[in-house]
Image 1: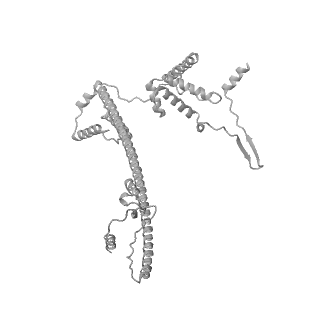
Image 2 (image 1 turned 60 degrees about the vertical axis):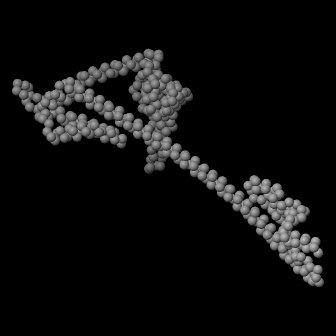
Image 3 (image 1 turned 180 degrees about the horizontal axis):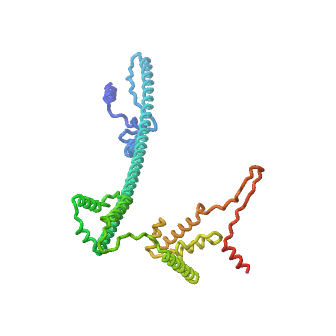
Length: 392
């Protein structure tokens, strides 16, 4: 009896289970506890949740058997209790398995959401950087345009000031400025007007948005005002002098005819020099003398003529031609090639080629007969003379 009581006391007191009855409640395998479970601690070290492959077995406590006459009744009751505990254990295992699976799915979805947010953030940052670079380029372009406009206005003001100083020097050399200033008595209103004009001339061009047309109109108005001020009053006859009459404006026909004859003779000499000279000069190789012809080899000859013309130009003239044709300069060979391509494309553009003339069509409404008349080119006297020479 004492041995049975001690064993019962040991089991009820929660002593250590027998070595072969140990079972891990994480993986459900027997022979070890959770502190010795290699699968659980490996999953924990890797940072992922541990999902058991087999449900852990639940230990059920059985009621102590009695040696009374009601042993069969207690046995039946213990069997029903054991079956209920097994069913509840299976339900718990299923719920735990579902919970772990759901937890893994949530963790996977959270990782995917974080990756998607990171990709979106990276795309937005790249877009912001692209917009910032575009804004910086636009700002740099505007700044360069403003600097160019400022340089242009400074050049214009310098040229205007130079022209004004030259006019003043010429006027002083003629001896009219001193006489005019000495004979003129300036009133207060005239002085105000003069100072106002002087201030306007000083402040012209300081604003960046100055209009070129306005500047041209101001220069024209200043010239007109100067022309009006040259004559202060009516002409007064002077004693012992012939009457003052303004001569009429007329052209000398003799001088005009003589100049015309001289020009024609110079043109004839120039044409003779051109026909007799073997090497082309710079005047001959101008763009006005380069003609675009049709037929086989016409385009190639036109491009060769343009190439020879641009080869004769200096660097400054070539840059001016590139600016006029809106072509990037780069270097000399590349600029000449681009200019030749540009001139060839403009000369042989199909939209610039005239269409052939259609025959003239007249309709007789009374008889319903249509007569087609072809227009023949009129033969000039020069053609007739050439035909007579050929016949001779």
